[in-house]
Image (cartoon, rainbow, N blue to C red):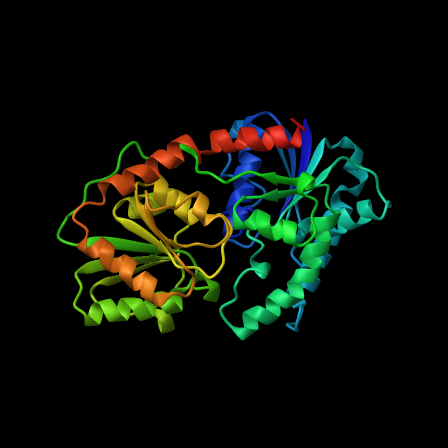
Length: 379
């Protein structure tokens, strides 16, 4: 079998949850001896042509097509403009090989041009699937600027989703969104994401019971809820609550809290170092306004952490009262209450064990890969 995987970058060459998911798609398709024409670009110091993050056996099945992401002056809608131009580059790169593919999997706007050309009848090829991950442009926005960005994106995302042969969803509220924008339910395929077996722990780590340790993993993007989280942490510090809180990710100095209870590790791309840091904590906090199926939650669960997260996207498929706390987005009172519940908790063992069990039995990439392969094979 041969597929084209048209992406807007794969991790770690480009950072992001979508890019990490694309990396694992390429990896597990190749592990299952599926030839992958991988369309992507580089936004890092790594040598993208070396594909050093894949094994030699995997590289034998991955055929990279490296593009440059267009640049332009900033103006309202500049991201959409650049994304469309990128999709044109991707289309040009594979248009002469369309009849060689058994399936074409596109991520975000990367397949825009191809999907449009097929829908218009200008090209003939196999089925084309699209994945927009969380469809965040149809979720709650934290500010006016974000609402404007969402408004600009919505009509394009709706059109691409309606024109694709297959629309991939993580499930939950994301499927509800996809249906609400007019996609035929028969075209929707629900598949969660996962974690590699090697990343999943065998048991939860024991910690110092003198205080609870929390961790946030991600960028200082407004929709990630850091502003609300910082306000709650300041209150806990004022209350002299006994806790430690670690941030993993590129947090600007202007958003950092200067206190002995707060630790900032900066941006880390090494998966093993991230795993090591996660395993030293008790609870991951993910207070986002909008999400898809966050890899950070899966990685934390694989490290045996309980979870505090907002009930957005498909998060409810991962988090419940069995392994954590689900709260409403932007609800600082619920966030504070959940953090205090953890601080005062005498035993988090059952929640942490449930997180680990869920990943082991449901959200590992061996299982997720089979579901994706069955979907693209028409099974």
